[in-house]
Length: 161
Image 1 (cartoon, rainbow, N blue to C red):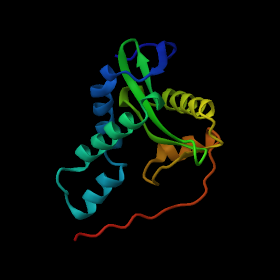
Image 2: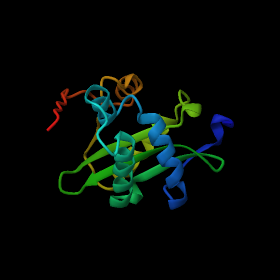
Image 3: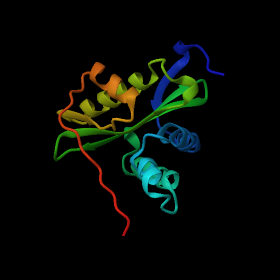
Image 4: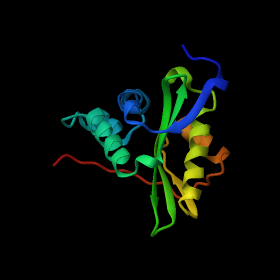
């Protein structure tokens, strides 16, 4: 059971957070990830969207573990954000943001984004980027409130081969 909002702390990622991050990923991205939506239209592509999404999260964490931040309610992982930075481009990117459904609509996602932005500044980034799909209504509402401006929309096309 979620504790008081004041009990949420944002910490650096530790390997013991991994399994809970993966659980939250599967819950949070069902219905809004590109792979999930493609499978709804074209059928399941083995090994399935969830396996691919977890693989992506693992790869992101391995690439820049110091850019992964976790929201904790006591010792319970309530959410996470993964950040990628590029010294060459000077652009930081929030790759994934997910909050457990029991903790949503309490500002935890915003706290995680703010910590990710702090990290980007620490790493010398000049721009921050976050992407979302039109199916992610929460993200579409939240990101502009945090200062992000829409630049362009993208269409994803798939076809069986």
